[in-house]
Image (cartoon, rainbow over all chains, first blue to last red; front, side, top):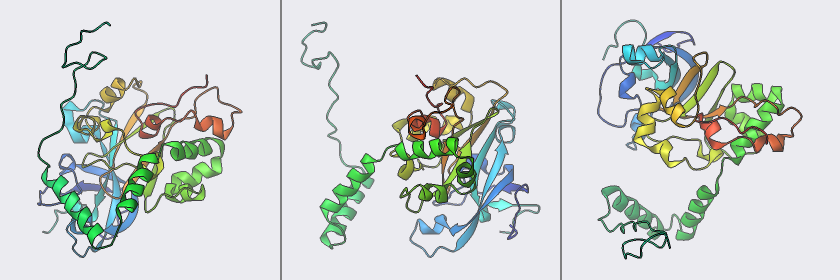
Length: 98
Length: 212
């Protein structure tokens, strides 16, 4: 994930399942959306939850269409869902180098 | 008396709820242990804990309603609210603590609704304690998948011309919906307008009341 992603950029939520207190819900993993706004940097909750030193990570609001999330089963394909996703959960073009 | 006097029924004719005599869960034991340790080590007193519980229980959606009414009356405030809802809340003198608030506004073609699929994040400082259904698995799992069906169960039938925007509070933000100002409210005072703003209209599962 590059340091700066502008609103309007296409991003994909990483499709992985690490253990622990993760803040990216499973139904969004592997899905592509558009950055709605940048929210700033916050201490990484996935480390904070265990009382570990938590580095600051960028947080973005990403907008997905219902069509992208649920495919043919979408209730109304053009309706949308916004969620906050941390930078280490987002990838732009190339697959994330783990 | 419309009901019989069987011993297993209350005077109003309903069965008594059984006492909750099961063993404490792991997390209940953990909560009691931590609380007792904090008291024993002198970090907090039982009175402070009780006072904090009372303060949380006493919170209501009134501050959220005041915020919405101000936004309806003052376009410049509304702009500030949409740009930074935390700052706008503080401007009104509300103690929202460390809350990072995002306001999302309804209009003729947009309806917003808020959930938290991962837990039960809710802007408590502004709206008080969340309703039980907000924390239920049914609401959290269904509203992201079939929001229109869920809203219809709340009595809100949205035409296809209205775009539904669901907001999942997955991380550090909390959300408040700014409903559209109801028709027929021209000239009403900010205070009278606030009385029209319901809790559910600020979650997005309802609309404000219309003036009587």
